[in-house]
Amino acid sequence: MYRYGSINRMGERMYQRIRCLMAACVVLTPITGVAQQNYPDKPIRLVVPYAPGGNTDILARTVAQRITDNWGKQVVVDNRGSANGIAAAEISARSTPDGHTVFVGSTREMSVNPHLFGNMPYNVERDFLPVSQGTITPILLAVHPSLSAQNVKELVEYAKKQPGGSIPFGSPGIGTPMHLSGELLNMMTGLKMIHVAYKGGGPVTTAVISGQEIKFGYLGMGPAIPHVKSGRIRPLALTITKRAALLPDVPTMIEQGYKDFNTNIWFAFFLPAGTPQAIVRKLNGEINRVLHMKEVVDFLVSTGVEIDPGTPEALRQTVLADKAKYGQVIKAANIKAQ
Image (cartoon, rainbow, N blue to C red; front, side, top):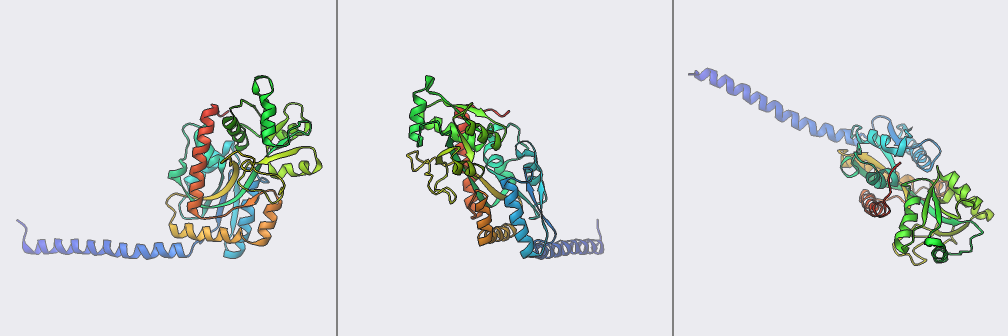
């Protein structure tokens, strides 16, 4: 049997442990709050899943410079070009959720890849927090001038008159939003136009200009504009919901009667899951501030994109809506990654 003194000493030791635990809880919350208030307290890394020079990289570098200037903390761009952006997305998802690693992702990594690849090393909804959309690259449906079609309905009628109701169309590659745009038109019209995959935007644009292998294709608007202005290709439609600033005379698919036809390539900012909401809000506010600066808007629009920042919730809805839409297209067209 324990003596009273032993019991009393045991009680005192337990009491001291409880006091220490309570003190730790009290101290931890202010420290965490201070860390969030002091964000960023070291350089921020923007992980870009492509090589330098593309639309994702241009957006990242433009935003990085303005945030560096405003916050006084260096923001660096880390180009991790790899097949389909999967490696870069995984690196970002596995990083410390403190706001200092930001993934600059696109439609491909967040809404298309989950349907094309099995055993993905990241889960978009589980592993990422949306911050803000940045820009949109409109997709241009363009034809070779030898084709008589002046609008999409005339193109569809032309295709229906060909043997098997089929003509080839080009895109920058399998599973790209351009490819999926062509398959979506197939779904809407009942046609079976054959996809021809090229290795990038340059080769498919060249193919449409030559008119030898294909007579039409889905192109990134920015690189196609000089060829539109020179008359080497004829634009029939944009696949976004409103006309583009640089091609105001080109109607959308929706305007031409193809309800809800909305495909594009968006570029957006994401943080690893578990990042405090205070940091998400702060970064969202700063990105929106930068993307409303006149000089930033003028520069980015000149590269062939549309500016479209917003809230984390708006980005989340975009990711999920596109994921559902492209999942249906990929399944219907039986598209397989190569």
